[in-house]
Length: 433
Ligand SMILES: Cc1ncc(COP(=O)(O)O)c(C=O)c1O
Image (cartoon, rainbow, N blue to C red; front, side):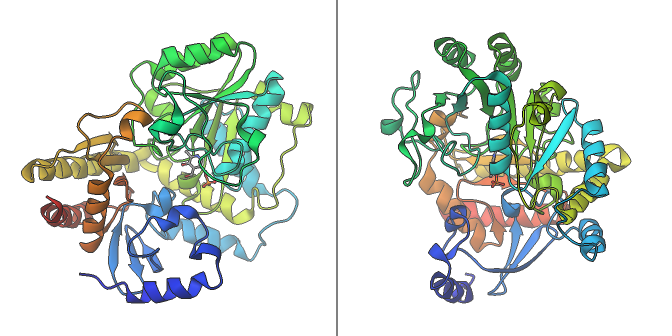
């Protein structure tokens, strides 16, 4: 049984100085306290008690190349002495923009932000300016950042959220101005009829439809065949801008993200996290006629750290790694991630645990649920107590997944790591079954 004495002491001390002891509420979701890590390397994290964790949280996604990827770190280190922010332009920004517009089919222009949350706000502003409309369709269970306008119906409980066919917008935090979510139209995901009804009953008022094209935050769930294509068609018919929030899926599900994997190109795309391997960077990319209104119609977007030298250098080095040898890295991730999924499936069967694995090798979830879900309302039925028990038992055996048992996989998880993980999972299943 690992000891967490040092983390507990450090956390108690931190709480005396740092509100709540964390800088992001997501980090509360850890037992016995938010753990303190001394360092990360490849697929492993080393905590302040000397415990080693095979990490499948990966900073909630960015560490797709593993922790402290040497080539990215070296590329960033090379730029440190140049400076960080110039309140002006530099060639790394040009280089990255050239690379991204060549890479992403729908990216005729890009613009950088420093976090996914900010990039989403930028996309909303662009879509509203482009269409002259104000409402946004958002899906239950999807997360697009923590700010007032969009932290809505992320994890609504059944009794607050109203009937599935007519969901009520539920603000998931206190402290939000009452009018902040007035323009959000809430829909069930993976259901074209529902989206059609939402667009028709708000005819001429919807500026944008935003979604995680593979849902991750409310349960890792694939889009139904034809759903993304249908959503694109509906948006086109109604003059609404389709935004894919690929903050997690971008470069993770493939070099061109979920849109490349599923073959549907949205009007605007948001990438973040894995694209800069852990350095703070996000981007909005999209159609030229939409993006260029930033210039032609004076759409304000700012940010002191946007396009900073180190984040640009990190993203360029990341793209170098992802694109070499015809994307061989993705072939390896697919094969190894699939091995891990198969191994976990066999172990669940061996221990007679009712478990489904949803998602794809680079990002999946082990769900204790009777039927694989198609949307938030269905995924909210998963057995959370069992998920927590499993994630806790895994942690005790040196494997770190989040409390929903979502697994972020990386290019650094090699065959040896997978074997160790499966041995740990065998013990964890034995503990909870
Ligand atoms: C799909 C999605 N969109 C937006 C965000 C917000 O990004 P950030 O935490 O960088 O603000 C997240 C964060 O996890 C996310 O998963």
